[in-house]
Image (cartoon, rainbow, N blue to C red):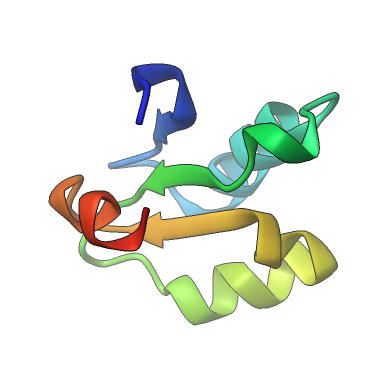
Length: 72
């Protein structure tokens, strides 16, 4: 995993988190997916995934960066 494969949205409210994810996905090649997104422990990941719609499959949400090592 490269650092650029992860964006840090920890501490952001849901709307800016969704916006940052959408911006990071624009123009991204399928080979550069999934996009790892670090969110705060209070983030409602299920609600965020619903908001992402079909793009939710292109994103891995986690509240601890160590979780990405077990996913990839």
